[in-house]
Image (tube, rainbow, N blue to C red):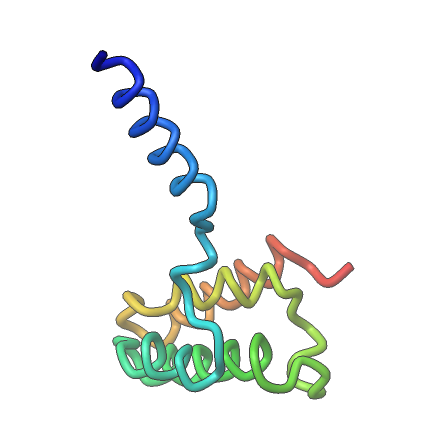
Length: 104
């Protein structure tokens, strides 16, 4: 008698887990991106680079300053720039993301 209830609960749990996506938790607009990430950046240049990454990712991907970044590089920057405390390190993160995920 308990097996159908356990199987039903397991099927429900697996069904709900399958619909969740990792990207569902990140920012979906420029305003969300800036509010969540750029305002928390520890360095001045890190905040500036974060705003640029948010702009290129969500607002104006065809802008001249955005042509050097792939979407993956922008995601890398958005995910990595917040804890950087020094301006030189922020530029290092930008360069590493750009080189690791070049525009194809």
